Image (cartoon, rainbow, N blue to C red; front, side):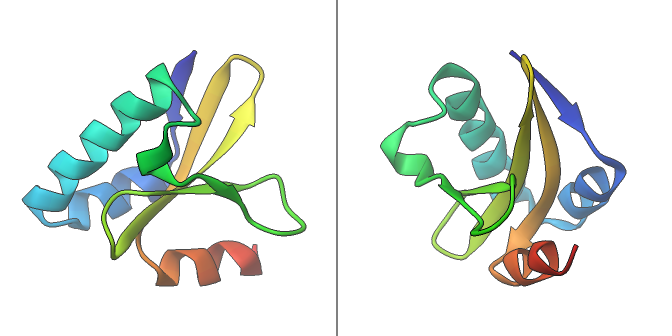
Length: 87
């Protein structure tokens, strides 16, 4: 499985505090090794093909499965989920 980074994800990542970036890097490693790892708490956004997973208590990232790849869409606080629902 490979990770594909969208431009919005790259921009969001750059705006995260360094501590959250490190936590996200760890979460992405977990995603690659076991997408169902309990600490990710991955869930599907209702009515979409978009998934979200936990970075910390306050931060999430969204992604989609595309064959053998995972497309990383956005990352940020819980507000990121509201923006994804509008797409």
